[in-house]
Length: 208
Image (cartoon, rainbow, N blue to C red; front, side, top):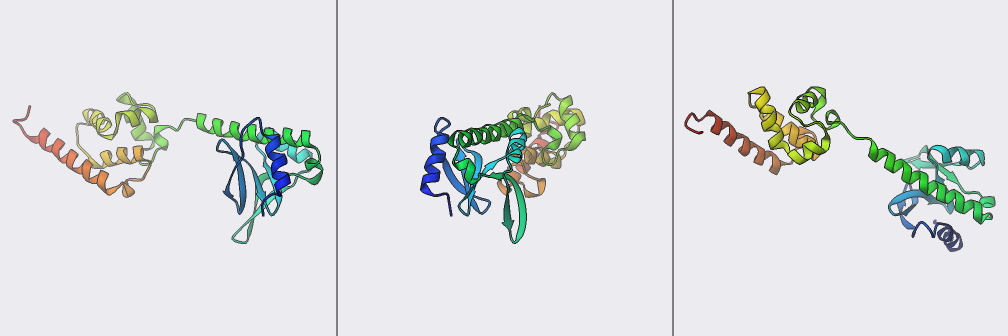
């Protein structure tokens, strides 16, 4: 059961400056989002605000209870805090809390996006390969994506002087975001034929 119509209207009024509330299924209840940012949950007619960093301290100090979600019979406590009856009666305070929950949820998403993933954190790469890529001028994930698996492989090959199709697969998988073992079949076939042409070209003494 979602919030009553009156409560939902009260809530929308409180966040009207931020935008329109959208709903989607979340944690056995209904998640409430503005601009794709999940800031609250409604479950069993109750309403819970998301508690991130500083705002969580505020919610706890007010005595708001955490949301307990039962996942396959196992209770899981989430960082969402229940809006009490007294808070519903205080529109000014409720609007302030809802706005804070939204702002901090947005901040958390932005902070998470700011942390750049290193090459070594991509599937199939690791620290040794990261260092080899640095040596050939590829130091960021974005650079590897722009250069592409084939060109990156050729750069590395100039350093290593030996061909290794598994290295090519590893680079392609890293860019695709998947492990070598689950590289899409079509891509794998294309890389195999590209690599065999490359090897053939290099081994032919008459090719210049």
